[in-house]
Amino acid sequence: MPLPTVYLKPGKEKALRNRHPWVFSGAVGKEPEVEPGTLVAVASHEGHILAFGHLEPKATLRVRCFHFGSTLPASETDLWQAHLEAAVQRRGRLLDLSNTTGYRLIFAEGDALPGVVCDRYGDGAVLQLRTYGSRRMLEVTERYLQALGLKHLFLKGESMEQKSKLGPETESKWLFGDTDYLHFIENGLKFMADPVNGQKTGFFVDQRPNRERMAHYAKGRRVLECFSYSGGFGVYALKGGAKGVLSLDGSQHALALAEQHVLGNFGAEPRHTVLKADVFDYLKGLEQDQFDLILLDPPAFSKHSSTVERAARGYKELNMKALAKLPSGGLLFTFSCSQHIDRDLFRKILFSAAADIGRPVRILEQLTQGADHPVDIYHPEGEYLKGIILEVD
Image (cartoon, rainbow, N blue to C red; front, side, top):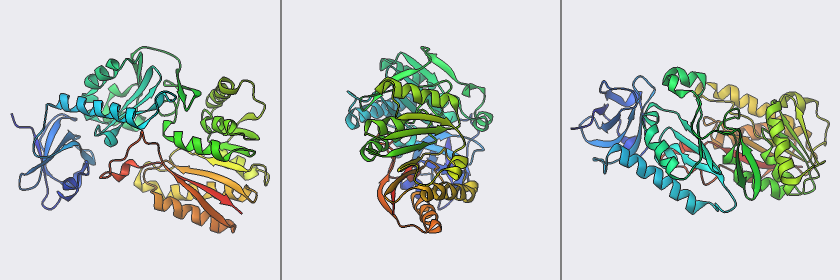
């Protein structure tokens, strides 16, 4: 039986021919009346099938494709499972799993599994399913993950805005197993992910290579870790020989985790302190030259294209405050995880911040997400994490 088919408007097939996996509503000429998340073929206006994906009726992003070509090589279930297998094998090739057991196992479009994000933490994992289509494939995904030998799998619910679109099945729950924390190692260091109460999947595995850069630069420096969450960068700074580290966050629960991470790796460590405070207010009142290295790793300031201008002002203000308080030779590690703030715009924001404080500032390194967050070259939107290391004269 032929699949239900979405037909594009005339001249709207270029993106799909270039293997971009997203079909927006403005490109759709005709679509079938089917349940959300149904597998559909996507065809040109003339009827030539170009790709296959999951349909989300009434959504702006109408179809998320995961196979290109005129025919499916296997059933939907078999194809989905093949993509899961490929994702797992890819991590085995990219990472040293002997000393890192916390990493992104599945990265949505980067692994041709749209809507699926899964972070592995030792013998457990946290799964996010962000689309109707990925939720339809939950049983296949869960069965495959359990076959890997995982003892715990937590399904992390989405935001309230997403819940209203996806329905009550987005509630967080243990699919199998149950534990307070998932323990893992990263480059030999010990960490815990908090799947139930933590941010995102419980830890920020995308920053792993950037935490390594922190260890490289931190020796002998006084480090301020802003938006510290559970203190990952601070642990690496201490490993690298920092003179002192202050982990600053608005969550007491996160700071308690940061203290546990330091204790678990170094024992009682007088070089590390924590402070619950608003980052903007703290930087405003910070004494000049109190820290030699400041880390800014804020939550996404922009989650929609309509908020980019306001987010840019927020990033500029934050970076101005930090740059102004650093001594000559001081370093700023600064990040944006806002998908709508692209790399060029982030550079322009930092240029504007540096120009306004009137100090010489140079770029030492440009950073991004780890290799376990692969970016499909046809889908540049997958490169969401931007980071720059700046030196101030």
